[in-house]
Length: 204
Image 1 (cartoon, one colour):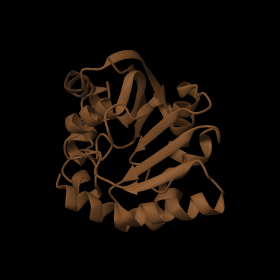
Image 2 (cartoon, rainbow, N blue to C red):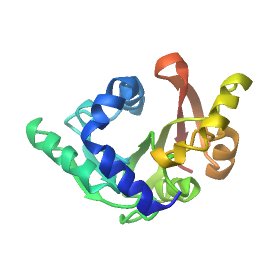
Image 3 (cartoon, rainbow, N blue to C red):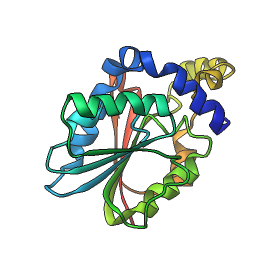
Image 4 (cartoon, rainbow, N blue to C red):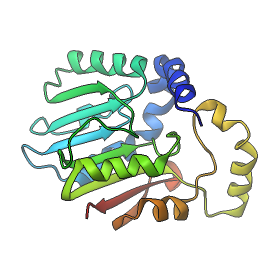
């Protein structure tokens, strides 16, 4: 997928994103923050923060930085930050594949529902590792190709049209993990029917 196309797609989706994907994806968002076990003063980066729907889940005692390629999504996130008085949150328009932060800036880095959207997920993960301190936590929540052959067949059929909606329906977990080269703590199913997975890794 082309980065400009992804940006334009999510600009168009911005106004209705929370209504369509809010409730469905919220359990996974909440579980990630819960598993982060944040301590006061922790520096957290959320890659692909979108409309900022997850920002209120973080403790007020941590510093949260959110980045996204879609200016219209971030405009809604900025509005949410002001209305909910989320003084611990900072937002930036930025490409997840080329993060504009120094090495080891953050204690914890997460990408929620982004890996199958990014044109180059391997590069995104490399950037997540780079900006996370050694020994810090990495979290990825995403849909991966299903273990059921029937569901995988449906995913292959829909793969013809899903790129036009801004994501890949065929996204094998084994290939993603091989490319990511994570030191995995665990992988946990999340959301409805456990169709999505939360990967927790430590940054080596």
